Length: 80
Image 1 (cartoon, rainbow, N blue to C red):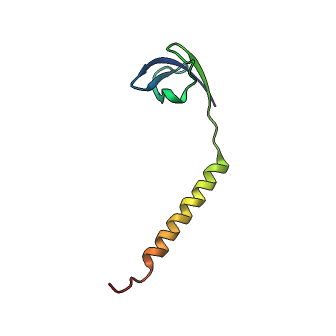
Image 2: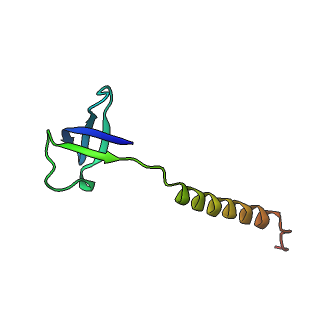
């Protein structure tokens, strides 16, 4: 998916981006993550892709952490 936005303004370190189609919302984006040459009125072109491989890797990692927490919490507690 491609998304074209207009940089509407900068406020408190954030760029306010208005999608070209449909222009009924605003996206607040850290100005420091944009190229230095971007100014109010600049048009930006974003490409948004689902990274299925990374999604699955993170899910496996989180599942492993949850399983480890469950195993650890089920162990009998030692004497105090």
